[in-house]
Image 1 (tube, one colour):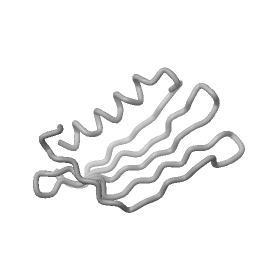
Image 2: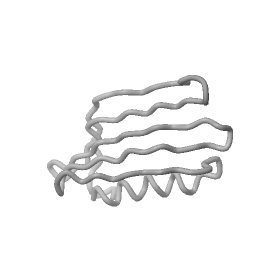
Image 3: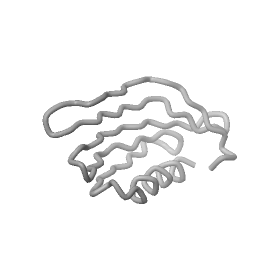
Image 4: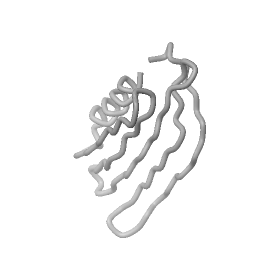
Length: 93
């Protein structure tokens, strides 16, 4: 379940024609808790640093924490940092 979620993220990134390079790292703390983090470099010189923590509880995949930092070479353009519980039914994966 977690692996499928991370694979979907990686596929969306690798399929985007604006992405020049990306480096993602998966870390599995247990069978039901993991996170993915990394950096995506875009053709216009901007980049996105990302972090997403997920957990499986009661047949649902929950994104329990995330951070996204979008920046150019000189400054941060936007930053989203939130501890938020977003649930997806396991049937979707």
